Amino acid sequence: MNSLVKVIPLRWNDFDVLGHVNNVRYFEFMQDTRVALVEKMNLSKADISEIGHVVAHQEIDYLKAIPMNATSVSVRIGVEKIGGASYELSYEISDGQDLIYAKATTVMVTFDVKSDSVVRIPDNIRAALETYCK
Image 1 (cartoon, helix red, strand yellow):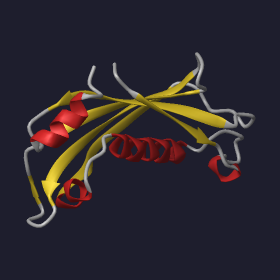
Image 2 (tube, helix red, strand yellow; image 1 turned 45 degrees about the horizontal axis):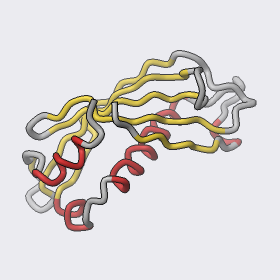
Image 3 (spheres, rainbow, N blue to C red; image 1 turned 90 degrees about the vertical axis):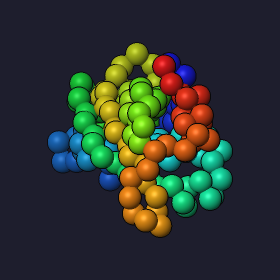
């Protein structure tokens, strides 16, 4: 899979009283990595401001707790599939080596910001997404 990897430093407030990263933070790691992917796709401001991308569905499998002594996580993101008006992203949250903490997916839907309605993925955005497909 062509993918992007973002290394995210862990902060004190990422951890909870049980001594591991709080489950809600995983979704923030995914969002930060999605933003990095969009930035890497070099879409214009018009592309982003006219065609919105919203989360329709997310799911995550927690495989191992991120321990208190971890200083960062690596998040690998790729495009699993592209439909007419939606696309699915996959993530692997790891220690940057062999230890995978979680696997997740997000289904994104494109919509016209002005009319607030779902639209097909424009050709230029589809081509940018295809760069990160399996």
